[in-house]
Length: 352
Ligand SMILES: Nc1ncnc2c1ncn2[C@@H]1O[C@H](COP(=O)(O)OP(=O)(O)O)[C@@H](O)[C@H]1O
Ligand SMILES: [Mg+2]
Picture 1 (cartoon, rainbow, N blue to C red):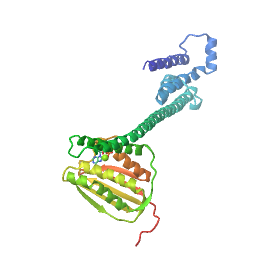
Picture 2: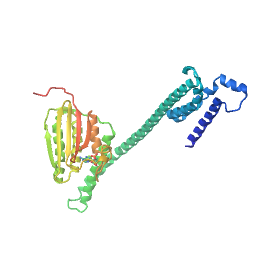
Picture 3: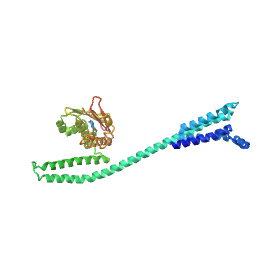
Picture 4: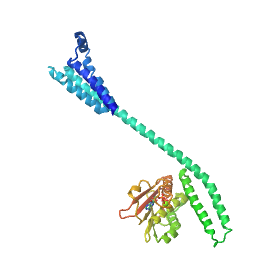
């Protein structure tokens, strides 16, 4: 702010000097006056405030200073009688604007470039920080994995010394169950932190969806949620990583079941059309809150009490690794719909 005031003062100061030379307000010896006018210095000096205006305030500054000077010398230009092109003050006015606009555009362009460069640098810096953080966390997760397995093994061996009705037995069960849960979180996180390599096999896409539904069937039953499988149950075999795709589908179906209240329905379908396998998993739950839509695929974003926030990012990673996509939307009538799309190459004709 203060800097701008000083800049404006400098421009106005130079303007005042150049304009007083134009109108010969400043007292000066006759020889100097004549020399100034012969060299056309009074006109050329006007370019300095215009360039400063453009340099400090961009296009607006350039045009505004040019306009102020032009307005100030206009009376001189109007006094001249004769053809327009030999009117030196008028010709100069055209140049004032041209220089103001040109310098302003150049300065604005440079400013925009600089802002863009700064933004990119900032983004790169934070991406590098996140990557470093990711590598560090993956290292820690890896360190945790091995002792966790030993703790679980030890707990299971110790538990054998306690009969099922022993008062201490439930503690061992809690210990090994929590170890298992923690192990799953660590495995999911490790999966997410490294690029996955696919083990492709020829499998029927419908069979993978059926297997995913089977995996959550007992949970759905205890929660009173109905499962409905539609579409091509078998279908011709296509090249997929069956383990990964099934895991991604399990994550989607599990989320859907968890989102439903008692009496709810989870529907799954699969279509293979024009080179794409399209799985759809929908539920009759509350759908995805508007403010969560951008975040549900971020690692560790969860709204569930015992959630890990790794299910959806993993499922999306599987889709992307296959060259596909995973998208979520809420249906107008309520409920969420997840669409997992995977491309396949038409290697052979479907049997007639
Ligand atoms: N079918 C769904 N309906 C509504 N919200 C969902 C659904 N699936 C996922 N979400 C939201 O996305 C979040 C992240 O899901 P996910 O990555 O699977 O992690 P988690 O299940 O451990 O919370 C969930 O906590 C939930 O808020
Ligand atoms: Mg989940």
